[in-house]
Length: 341
Image: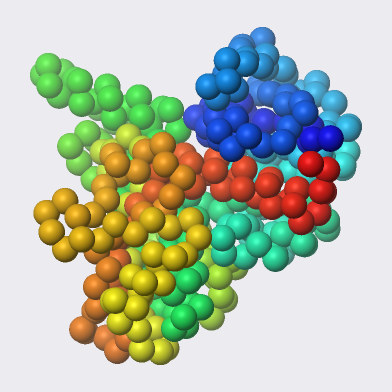
């Protein structure tokens, strides 16, 4: 007997990707329900490449009783309303929004990094999925932390517009087209023109001058990996449709060479090392789209600090940064606790 699974927000970018990945990974689901807002009621969504389509129902009237788990991709406002309802009905919620990430009673999970933390889900019947940039970074950091103990991380991100949803992708496309034909390229969603530009501003500003996106990377890394690690981040939106990139500088307590780090990363779960010191011997966002892996390139020693390394980290943010990690959490939940399939 398999699982009864709900995908909430099934018509959005992440929701559709969740359905694709459930199908690709042959998740043991006996039944899948797709729910969304009233605007999407009645729409048909594809279940991957299986040829099967599922009709969306209105989340406002959905009966959560009897469903095993729900993968939420409806934003914080929607999760605040419907996650407690689903959880109270016995349906375990795996939430992609930021709402529950720092709740001490809600586990924040990256399965390759802290699978044992999922055991705490029973307190609220809710599991949180981390920020997309955090997810790929901690996958890269975990095996290195185990080997040499990380003290400090300095990360600069190069985040694609899909992190802002379909509206972000549409704005990049429309601005690029307008510039080519000589029309105005006024920003709507973003604070400045994104086409042929970079914007060092994601989410709202905080009192200390950092942005909420940068704060998320700091606090989520500590919760997932190790509260003692010092983290500082600069998050930048770039004119790329899909795929987040990160330049990561790491300081360790113990000595570790670039060659040792490469060997560790080569064998680590969820990581694909592509690190040839030659033209094109590295991964860029275009090449990671549609893949499950977190790619690591440009591993090298930092001679300006004791026990320092630099590396380049790239991942499909709609997959590992959101949908894939949510499905991996669902798989982990099934193996470790529900055990129906």
